[in-house]
Image (cartoon, rainbow, N blue to C red; front, side, top):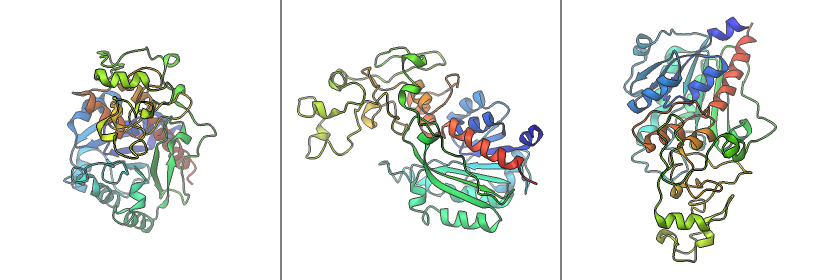
Length: 356
């Protein structure tokens, strides 16, 4: 069985900082390469995904036959996994600038070109649920239909990753296509679901720090700074799950929220996480208290860069390299949680070992 496992290899399209690659590698899959157009991801990817090549390329401009010149792959390889976890800003329900995120709209189509050309043994797609809600516009309908015509057994669903030992209420669209056997394959959810206290806090190796703390070590327990007024707000916000409602009728209320029903709209902003509940989805803006429920359960600050990465299930030894807090947070928030990717890898490995 070990020899069979070693034969499985993957190309990770839109790899960012390497969450999917790392999880698959931990499962026993050889990662041949990650592809991304963002040069800021290169150092982080290469520092953590040992033996893999980082291909700096815009997938929209990359031709199918050029890929085999950059990395050693061939058509119709049963042991090849092609992974396409494209940026999801265009399809997310989170309010984003759709003009700025226009580039992410057609990336499933671009990934589709390579799948059709190389016909790998397995195909994996992970994205926001919006790609399924708008299945015609996103190209998902055609993608699935073509996979089935190519002989793949295709299984997809929207899953809450909290059921896969990710301490977030992170709902994602996941697809695994398999033409090696005639089986629909998908990782099974766990019986228990983790909470924030299972991953961060003093008992998990996180020292108490203040807003604006800078950690120059690779651990990166770095925290964004806060104004005096925001610190006053957090001092009034109840520990362990408190919200901004407690200071809504004071002079600390934020101007944008002084309208009627302001405590209903965007009610999570400036809110604290709860120790005994999963975190909200860790987004690319998790370092900012004004962008979601990203305040530490007890301390008067946003969660740190390392706490965000840990809630995304990156190991504490994972090395992030970037020019700013924002660029590193973008890699973390855009990532497929490695622990979920590892379960996808185990599922494919098990199926591959069962082939006749």
